[in-house]
Image (cartoon, rainbow, N blue to C red; front, side, top):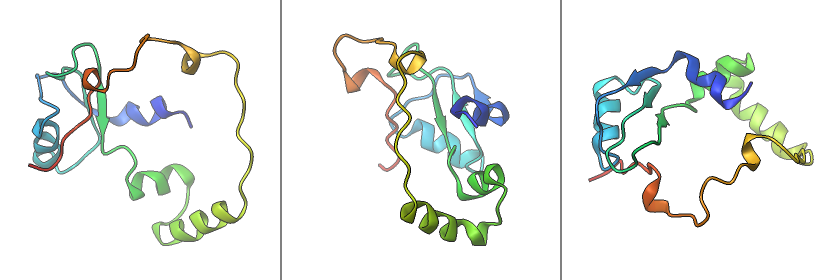
Length: 111
């Protein structure tokens, strides 16, 4: 399953929200459900998902019971596979000449 497939069930937040504590406050007010922020004050043009990789969501996608999750992680660590090398695709697109971490929506969760 692709990353974007997870976002299909996300609740969209279109109101302007600050990455500095605002995203967390919105998450808390929505019982920490899967949220997709479309209007982040500090990062115009960027979107950000929150609460994407919860244990319950991962178990559902993997088709396992939550009590089997740690066993699956243990198995995966003991049975690694090599990476898949890609030569084209969206992951290879260069969008910034110089990386500026202040321009992307990195949420601050704790005051």
